[in-house]
Image (cartoon, rainbow, N blue to C red; front, side, top):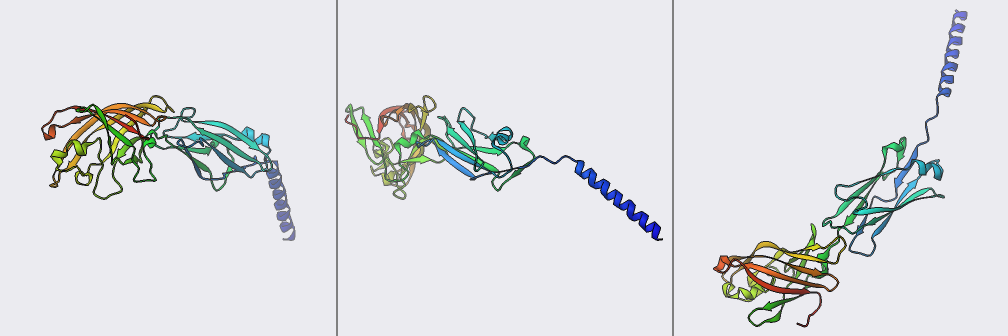
Length: 309
């Protein structure tokens, strides 16, 4: 019995040693890389002077700068923004003590009219990899807004200077009460809305006076004319400060003094220049709803400063 037990123990010891040797013969796995973005997101606003952003990646791993340079690979994915068209990678710098990566990204002039999102992530080819608490980074590029030249979102009373060329007198007349608004989902659109007074409106191309006989009043609170999307700005090129302005075709609802309503169609086209702050536009009015002509053209100037005409 004792001899048999001794034999079993000897065999077990030999198997243990053999297994240990096999494990020691296996190659050690390559070192994992601990990577994490320092922040989750940032925004570049094309309407400001700051057109670049620095994105930091923290590295916590037993690697040298050279090894990280060889292994680091990032993916930039977006449904709307294209590299070297809407943005560009200015630099990718790796520094030591502590080991970290700094990316500099620049927003390029673009015709985009809505926000663009870019997701930055680590490529799968870097496996095996250990990701930190922030494995992805979101970079948002806000669109340049030509419409903002003629609006001030911080001031509901803001209104540009509007002038109407009276064909009967051949003179320019100023028009008050043209409060402007920007559109959240389209940086190229300007509207005329009275947000300062409830159930009121704006003069909108002098319509409150042009149709005063039909309205029964020249009061903007009576007429209640509002147009959330009135003018569309089309730059001559990405980053250009001038271009074409379109009057967005629509039927404008106007309220009579007795509470009933009628509609006047508007359309048209012109030009704009942000540097001079001037819009020149011809508006076509469809007055058939009140027995008038299908197209009556009138000329206007919209300016950020007072004009001497």
